Length: 310
Image (tube, rainbow, N blue to C red; front, side):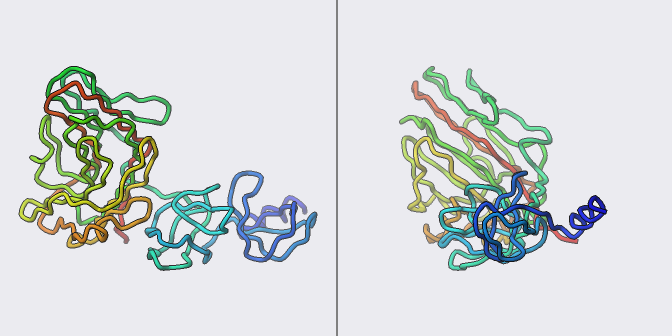
């Protein structure tokens, strides 16, 4: 009967655990197997209790960050709130949570299912003139050599996605070296690439970074309307990963978030892909026209989710 009882508990998404310290009902904990749990009833230290390991729960949310539907979120132990990063994985957002929101709904212990991801499918490494994309561990590194010449390095997906599927791109990217003559770094959704001039790509929405500058500029082109690169007032931090999200669910108002902050709003710009025909792909593209400037741009996550529902 003990085995049958435990199987029944798993069926209704509850597991037993022994409380190391006193717990309150609804408290979020990390179980010994690494999963998140929501405490079912109040417990004293040493008590045997139960925790929910699946279900949708309303949780406190970190202030001043936007969390998107389908985004994976983490628990921050020091604050007792969810955020885009934290101490352990909790689950996926069931709905958007605005910057001003103090709570959000999370489906715990469920991972998002991207349609395009670095860990599945086929990717292309664009290279000209002795440059390359080096893969080490879980990091893709876009590099320039020190030869004075026009050159490019790019990482992008062979798979594409139609714009009417409501794509949301997520990338974790860090700028380790952005030399003085590195002309452009572009990060976002695009309908193509280019060997020497990314500005020739006709459809793009995302971020643009200029030479020797950590400023994150928002930019879009849909073949008819161009929103020129505009400073969001958000700067990348040297040698530090940032989460960049391109939310194209509304093509008349494409959102770009950096660590949960609306970069387009800060730039007072509305990015548009309304007249773009697509399809688009996630891309990181680095180029220079001359000089011995080096580049070291690192990517450890790049994926696209779709908001299409049935």
